[in-house]
Image (tube, rainbow, N blue to C red; front, side, top):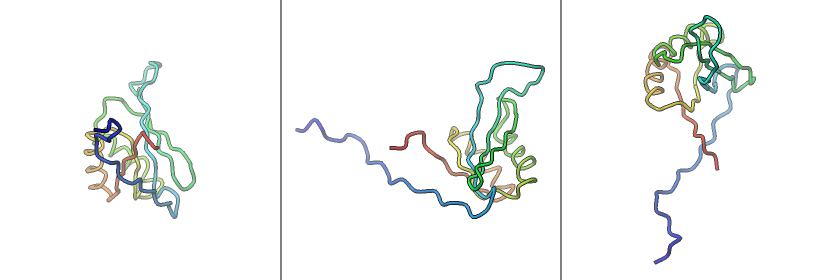
Length: 121
């Protein structure tokens, strides 16, 4: 018996993400939550949205304890009102959090959330 035999399932093929045709149509979303304490503010984390078309960033401060619903409403109120409705958000966040976030954002605007992986061979 060969010791070099694979023990797990094969990985699926990587799918290339389609390029956007206009600004703020598709964005990357990343949370930064490990910040040093400072100031009077209860805002101890921020959300970075990067437009895939122009590479322009948008930073949103929030409290690390906010729910997915709070985050979805913040994105809707503070981003979509300035840029138009985002069609696709690519995130690397915890699936449980993004499941609720995806449902809320989709119900508000029809936006789709895709997930990226940390490992890219």
